[in-house]
Length: 120
Image (cartoon, rainbow, N blue to C red; front, side, top):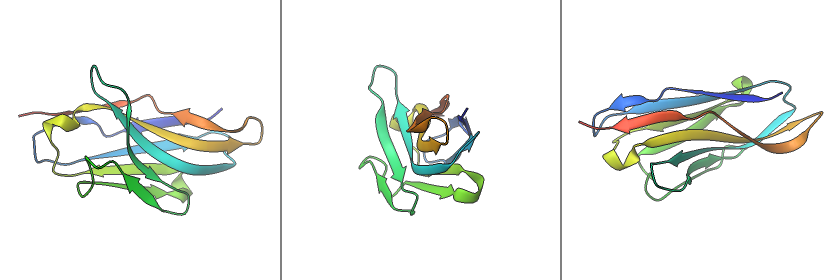
């Protein structure tokens, strides 16, 4: 069984920074792309950032230049460094990873979500 466990959310003032992490555990054979999504109340879940197993990255236009996604393959962990935070960044942030196991093949797994609130 594979689990993704997120940490690092919280309350921050506009202009501040937060760092999220998401660690995958279980009977993992390989981890391919890892992603961060977010969902604000009343909105659809949106893709924030992607990082491939080779380290290539892509970002939503709304976070380019402010957020940085990275990963530590030895720790099966993905990070999201968020700087210059704005109130519109307030949302529940979810990590997602495409993971293969020897028993279930390759599929997407989701973390439980962590709340990020940007407010003065």
